[in-house]
Amino acid sequence: MDQRVNDLFHRMRASAERLADRTEEVTSRAVDAAGKKATDMVESTRINMKIYDLNADVDRLYREIGKMLYDTHLGEMADQELVQEKLEKLDEKHREIEELREKLNDLKAAAKCPVCGKECKAGDTFCSECGAKL
Image 1 (cartoon, one colour):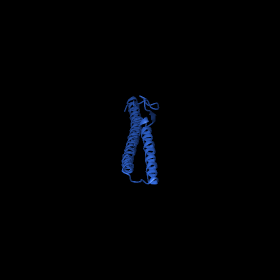
Image 2 (image 1 turned 45 degrees about the horizontal axis):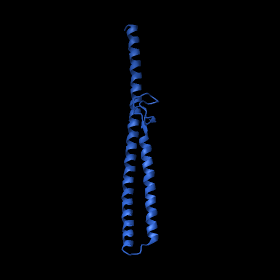
Image 3 (image 1 turned 30 degrees about the vertical axis):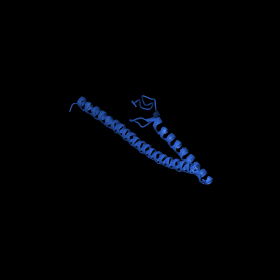
Image 4 (image 1 turned 30 degrees about the horizontal axis):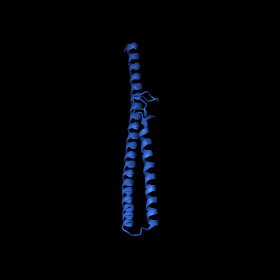
């Protein structure tokens, strides 16, 4: 075979190998980013379920406290320690809900690059690491 043709084949082969390596790298980063996104979605769902459960507890406590208040209106003596205990539980549930909402906001605040997986600011249009569109 002519030397120039042979050189051309070698250059083409080297280019194809570089392209394959780059494709593998980009694909790997995309898979990692997709996995991270799935993990974030699972965490977000878990937090939302916990908030839902805590809100159900809050509603139950409101009903119980309301019943005690109404019973007092009817002339029955309410156990002040029990009322205080329920109010403290209610405060605790509200604190937990607020903490979970902050975690949820933190999850939503950051944007992940779909190509390289770098965490970018929520308002960014392009990744600061690889330049990919977010």
